[in-house]
Amino acid sequence: MADFLICMGSSVTAGGGFSKVLKQPVVAFIGDSTFFHSGVTGLINAVTNGHHFLLVILDNSTTAMTASAASRSGTHRRGKVPPKVRLEELVKGCGVQRVFTVNPLQVKKTREVLQQIKEAMGEPGCRCSSPRARARSLSVG
Image (cartoon, rainbow, N blue to C red; front, side):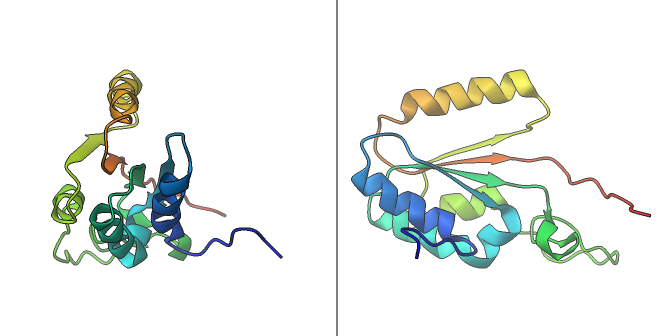
């Protein structure tokens, strides 16, 4: 038996719930394709209910759990280009007022943005950060 069970996309709703009972900052992580699949409704719920946490959406424009299938924020592997979902616009459409996008390979700039977010964690509301870097294909064998 477990005190807490985790399922795909649960970080958003769990982060929102923890933010209601903990007296410390809460940070939740989710991948971009999982966010599209099952995290959007949790974020809408968090904004609606005044939850207070940072959601980090790890955007590598791929679906790692399915052997690098395309994500809605990237292009299709077979050369087809599906309609692209702009992650920042989607998050803002959910009602999040503070959205930060960084390139995690630019370490100094990323640290500066994280410091800004940390300083603002005392203010109410949800925040989203989206570290964005293309996933690299790995060849095995």
